[in-house]
Amino acid sequence: MYVAPSILSADFGSLAKEVRDVCDAGADLIHVDVMDGHFVPNLTIGPLVVEAVAKASTKSLDIHLMVENVPFFVDLFLPLKPKFISFHIEEEKHPLRLIDHIRKNGVSPAIVLNPHTPISSLEYIINEVDMVLLMSVNPGFGGQKFIQSVLPKAIQLRELIEARNAKCMIEVDGGVNGLNVSDLDAAGVDIVVAGSFVFGSNDYAQAIKALKI
Ligand code: DX5
Ligand code: ZN
Image (tube, rainbow, N blue to C red; front, side):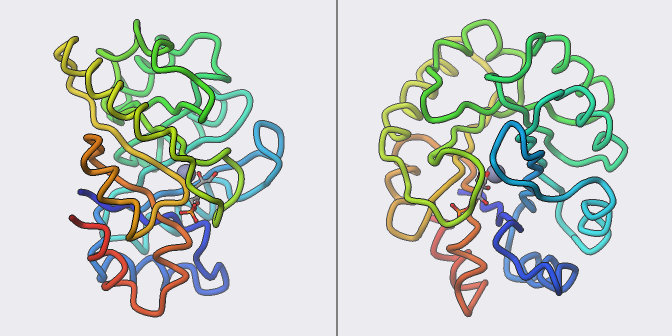
């Protein structure tokens, strides 16, 4: 299991140190939540702060866009050369065009599904993306309760990936902790995002180790 700590739960007054600390503690990617106050009822950070995160990080960035006007935000973050840029299927009218644009700029495109959005929405997309991110909370805030229905959904996604012979990783985001990570592993999940479980602990290395099963 790869682990991507979400800096949403970090101490923003010491952000560079927090990023260095989770990198040293064994993070595989740094998950960055960009929220615009429209797609979700919360407002976070823009490219200026994310650039500082990229400078502090020894690991690649995993940028999760929770925004309206997705192409505008994609172009703001492409110059930072993250590993992944993921955007919500619920928001974008021309996802295949945007996926192509992200890939042409040397970044791995990924699609996010809210808890209510079915796997069938990926039918014509699955072979074009490098990752699908399944939300296990309603996006907008850290520290929410894990929604169990993501488990059968991940199994269904794994079946679709295999049926289509797609090269696509599965990531789950929201409410992940040391107790539910084994269920996620059994469901075929490759990467877990964890905010409060990592940054709320007093030993980042131990928290990350608990997720790497
Ligand atoms: C929620 C964000 C998550 C969040 C996860 O909208 O996408 O990345 O930071 O936080 P936890 O792990 O606390 O649920
Ligand atoms: Zn996220």
